[in-house]
Image 1 (cartoon, one colour):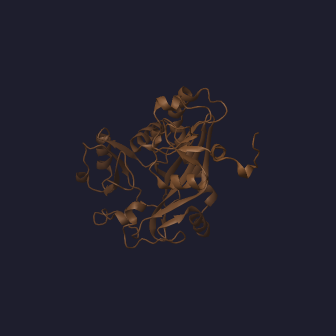
Image 2 (tube, rainbow, N blue to C red; image 1 turned 45 degrees about the vertical axis):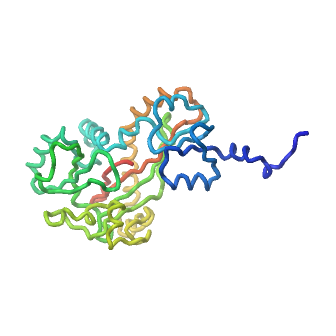
Image 3 (spheres, rainbow, N blue to C red; image 1 turned 135 degrees about the vertical axis):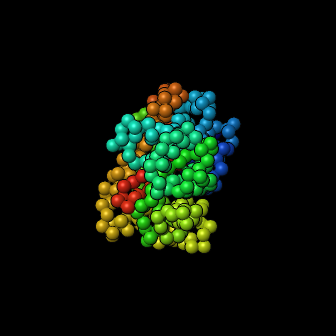
Length: 321
């Protein structure tokens, strides 16, 4: 005789099926494990049945093509075209050359060593400019430095060299940038959702225009949390500290008389235009792998857009994570 049971008495395997199974074999972020557990998802191994494959990097092409129609993964193939510093620079430079009025939200950028001659020409014409140099990959401020001296720039090393925005908008006298979280929910059609909160990251030394004396002060010129948390001046408070919420910044901008709606509209514009860069690459891979996924998008991605405002509140894209 079949045993009847209420919803509360359903066997564990049915509960697992209801809440979903997630594979985190290639995910090193503990917060994802914590959230999955809190939501009641069942964490499984790669050789078990899963609904969501969450990993640090996109799955390989072969695995993506074999995705079942009910399965999802947290990356789009081709998104590296904007998530790598070198690819982002190349694509934005291409677009700014073709559409200078529309793609003017990225600091002037050179990819070394291939762009060194162009960079040298600019440098010779702008003796007082400062530049920020970044490795083509990496995060958390590793390998980043600022200079005003041509002798400090290795023309043979693969680096991204950007014109330093020397007149940023200051918050309480400190340089800051914003990390805006964006969900790419679908590729076909393209659906973008920008979270209405995020992080404001402040430097921990009062800002001064770059000079030969202060250009090496990373606590003044870099806003990376991983850098500034090492400074004794770092303040841990989300309302008035060194890392704040976007909503707190919005309140401050409004109090100071800035056109907050205009600023956010321009930031949305930056995000959309940046996604347009990646779209041809993402869509090509998507159609190749998932052409038969008609009803449920098999991919989504959470991106972090790092935005800096200059003294006129013009948003500049720094990078995409």
